[in-house]
Length: 494
Image (cartoon, rainbow, N blue to C red; front, side, top):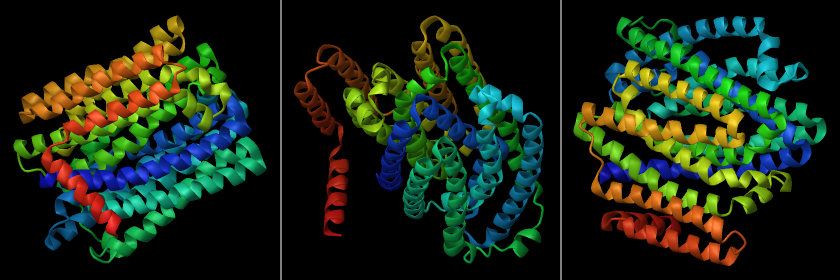
């Protein structure tokens, strides 16, 4: 139960900050929708996507390797030299990869701009993404240190500060400079994140583990650590590149077949999914990954994965029930009436993203235990399936084909990762978790039926949602209820 307490505690702290972050992003989206319209939202989404993906691509997944190495050596002061070596190798490789990426991207700037944004007049958005690259690379260092030491409270605090600053920057720049201001606010937000992550990581850990430019510069080149980071970079080079190419191809298919306005129309569904993939999943897997890195044997891995599935599924039931039941009202509140037609896609999109959360939890066990190549193999076929589904179904079914991409791939690969974990870690999903996951699927069916037959009956909808959420309490164990009650009482007293 202690492992579950730690996981739910860490997830609650990070999840709370992610929820606040999500709330501020909703305000930012509302302002963007009112002032920029469908096209502006589409361009802004593409800029956000490209800047973050280019950063992830250039890091080549080495940040996960760095977190793993620091986490494994964080409990002993005798291994502080290994941390210095890890940082030295990481910085050296990151700068090399960043230089190569910048050169290649600069050479193909016009082609990439046309492909991603649909028109070269949005070239400034591409250069914002390119300028964000070194900022994201250097920000990964202090963030990885905070993550490796599992300082979830500080990470949560910094996310809230960052979300408030991003909101203020976005509103100001959108008001005065329109779409260009919105795009450049992304660059300034990345820069602010680097400053605060560096400041607080330095304050919390740089002195403790003696991190200075001198100790890093004179650290030994540990061949074992370098080989491990290169293994992660090999995964990032192949799969990281393919992640971006796959998503770019899928988005380009939608934009070219249906137009940037239609792509912008789908933004509400993507936003709801982003709460899970961009907010909930990191909140859950941030603590889970560093714990899996330290796991001692298959039994502990199985316990951690079951805890992850349990916490994740409770959140999924609540989020799906509310977001899918009141999608029209939420879209009108967050966006505008022009985006309401997207409401019909939301339940199915969020369902697909829910399967993604389940398999993302299981997938974390692979890189955490050094099975990077196997993870890369699965990701390659997952991304290929995404392209195939989008290519064949968008032309035939429009945005429903785009929705299908978010459902079929996660569903299939949840079972693939489960079977892999079953044979490699002797994973067995606990009975109480199977019942909870089954209840989630039953909830999905109930909510879709409610939307169909009670579309205009808001009071009955609210009552149905309340019943679904109250029944959820039945699935809490006695120990979990006691733990939650005690946690609530402590917070009330504080």
